[in-house]
Image (tube, rainbow, N blue to C red):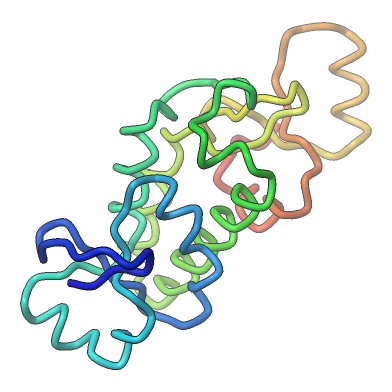
Length: 173
């Protein structure tokens, strides 16, 4: 399979994007070492899938993120090289949001995907690190201000607009 970065790879190593709207995520997906089928092959995705090329989905994405050490809190300075670019994180979050939207008509699969994401460090904390969604809280600004002033050590979600569509994956305070 010919890839978006101009290489040839096997069917077993390739993945294909479902929608053209996902093309903006290609650089970050490649940084996570996913071999994405070239955009010119999109019209043939049915054929690619028939021969065993999987779609990029939440499961594939979570496995890639976990293989790069995003299974626990990680300071941004220690992120894998492909995720240190701020635009790449925003593109990753948009891709995750799009993949979850795709599952809106299948609540069981969406719930399973959300559970997979909760154990991956993708949530931006106010401390500057990325956290697992099941280990960080979101709250209104007044609550955040109050509890941070008490220094209880509670980690709250940053107010990064690019992540706002995924905040529901985190724990409500």
